[in-house]
Amino acid sequence: MSLEVWRTVFSGATLISVVFVALNYWMVRSKAKAEAELAQDKEICQQAILAIERAFEALSGGNECSSAPAPDRLNWLTASRQILKFKKLKSKLKTELYKLVCSEHEEHWRHKFYLLLDHDDLNFPKYFQDQDYHPVSSENIDPTSALVIFNFKQWDPQQSDPLGEVNKDDIISDGYTLNGLYGFTKYIEVLGEERAPK
Image (cartoon, rainbow, N blue to C red):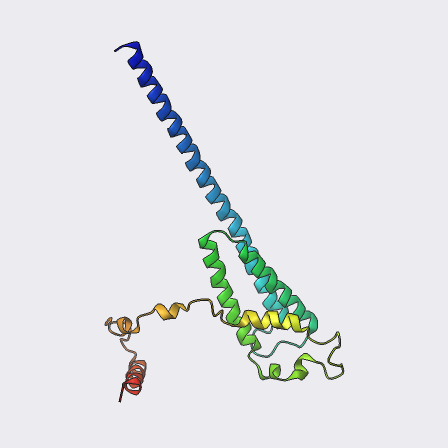
């Protein structure tokens, strides 16, 4: 082989080596970036979950859902601020994994807030406005904090309901789900009869 051929082969091999090194560098860098995003999102998600737990604890006063939360202005303010922190942290998530994890926790806590606030006491203005104070008193429940909390407890109309994707007929006819569930099977039959066109 001539010197010119050797130079061409060497140049080609050098070019391939440079491309390979650049590609390898890009892959390593992409992997490191993805791992860094996952690690960052893990921390953000943990803080977001902690914020929503603190919000519930502040509002409920530790009594879970057996009674309405105390009409305490500071508790409502603290809970609403923690909910806003949760939302801010959640908005900073970049990875689909931690967006999903955070959303699952959000739905759990949304339900707990719903149960906590599902008491007749909250249907009366006197709950929010202590009897001894005028409507504009600084001792009453702050309307903005209440709005933040009431907004959080509601199902987001933008979110699709995963139950909408379930094919009931497939489950009913799978041959094993309803085994031994005679009462529920009868209930399904009655529903079918009631909804059948007449």
